[in-house]
Image (spheres, helix red, strand yellow):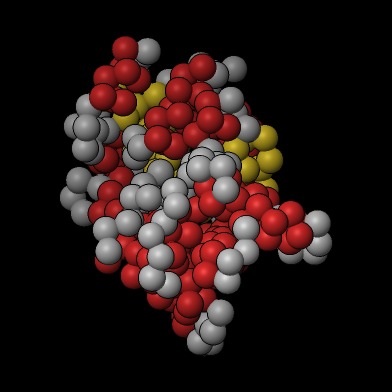
Amino acid sequence: MSKPVIGFIGLGLMGTAMCQRLLDMGYPLNIVVNRTRTSADALIARGATEQASARELAAACDIVMLCVDTSASVESRMYGDDGVIAGLKKDALVIDFGTSLPASTRAIGEAVAKAGGTYFDGPLGRTPAHAEKGELNIMCAGDEGKFAELKPVLEDLGENVFHLGALGSGHTIKLVNNFFGMTVANAMCEAFAVADKAGIDRQQLYDVMSAGPPHSVMMDFVKGYAIDGTPDLLAFSVRNARKDVGYYAKMAEDAGVETIMSNPAKQVLGLAVGQGHGDRMVAEMVDVFSELFGDKPDN
C-alpha cells in the first residue's frame, strides 16, 4: 500500500530530524525553505522535493506538517494567498507539531475545515535525537475518526502517540506541562544560586534534595549544568521557555482565570531574554540568578 505524500514546513533542528525519519521510512516528502538552505539541501539530496510556497506544498500533499516556533509563525504559513489553506487538497490532514496557543489552533481548525481538510495539534516531547529514531512523544488532538488515518504516520515518528480529545487539547496539555517544568527548573536554578550566597556546596545541596521527594528529572537537568557544566541535557532555550510560559498565562486568561504561579518564571525568563540570554539553555538560568544576587557565575 502506497504511503501518503507528506509536506513539511519548519526545518529547524526538530523538523529536520523528523524529515530525515520520514525519508528513512519511505514517505514521499515535500518541503519549503524559510531561512537557510543547509538542512533543505541535505533533504533534497535524499529525495525530498522543494516547493516554492506553502500553498504549492499543500496542493501536492496528503498530509501537511508544521514545526515552527510560535502561533504567529503557524498563522503566517496557514493563512493568505500563498498559505497552506489556499492550496489544501480535499480531505487533506494538517498537523501543528509546535507549541501554540489553543485559541489560535481552534481558529485555524475552523478555517481548515471550511477548506475541506482536518486540522490537528500534535506538540512534541523529547529531542531531535529521539526524532531521528522515531521515538518522540506526540500529544495529538483533533477529530477522532480522522486521527485513525493519521495515527500510522505518527507511529513512524513517535514511540508514544496520544490522542487527547478535541482540537486544542494537545496544546493545552503541553503548555501546562511546560509551565510546570519551567517553574521547577527556575526554582532549582535559584536554589543553587541561594546556596552559593549561603556558603553551601552545590553538590551537598543536590545530594540532600535528590534523596527526598523534590527529586526529579528536571532537577537533574539543572544539576547537569550547575554542578557538571553540561548545559544541554535539557536542550530548550530560555527564549522558548519564556514564550511557552507566556502562552500558558494567555491560555489561562482565555479560560477566565488569572494564573498566579507562572508569574515569577515568566518574569525572570523575560529578564534573561532582555539581558541577551535568550539563546542559552534553561539550566543556564542559574547564572542569571547568580548575577541577580551579585555573584559572578562559576560556570
